[in-house]
Length: 296
Image (cartoon, rainbow, N blue to C red; front, side, top):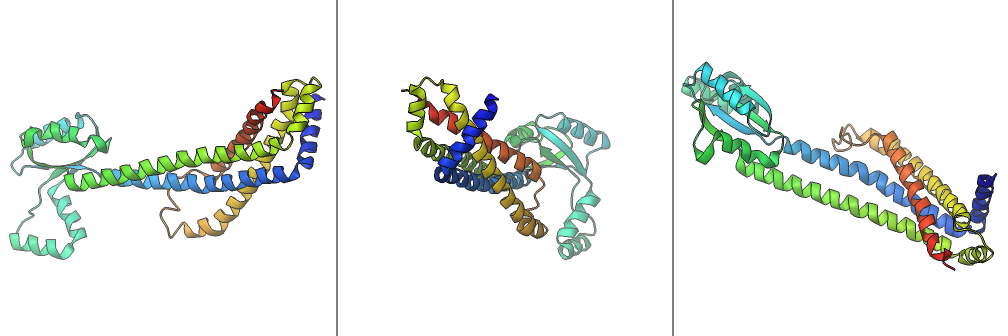
């Protein structure tokens, strides 16, 4: 019975303060739409940056004179090295095939001119953490000298690696910073809008407090109002996002890889997250904002 009373009071309060309630609902709607668009963009950008970082590798070239035993020892040494994720052996024939795929004419002419395959066998090492690539290089090529008999040369493509790591690191830092700022700005915007709505009814709160109503008796209708406002704003935002998704994003996902990025959040999960955030922020904003007006 008591919750029914609070619900009735909340609905009555929304009718009496329709303009501030509408402003709060629109604020929640716009904020949720912005977050609903920005979250997948941040995830897609970060996923693309991580994909680029996965291309950071170390190539360990094997001597022509290396025996099978020495190659096996080299592979075991690489696999036991810290920060090694995968090890791929590329034979001389595979190396030539890959080179011909990239530049068929040049390598065909070069092989014909030399009369043999000029490319060495190698181990391609992918690190778990590209930022710690030096651990692998130092283990196999300390001081610029190969540490095992089968090693001819160790190349980490230092210049390309530095460019990839710096660029992707900057992208990830910027997107993370923007995400944090947007979330904080969204919370502040919704809270301030709800504060204006509560401020318009401060006299009502003061009167209820003076006649002996407890703090939570006064607070619950406002909290329920916040839940209703957040729910309505979230539902409208989800409907708008669903329309945009089915009308624009899905048809274009085949053309633009960023839109079809597999690392982006599933739409149902995004909907649940936005609804939860809208309701929670609105309810908390109403309850916390009301606290200053309860000090009579």
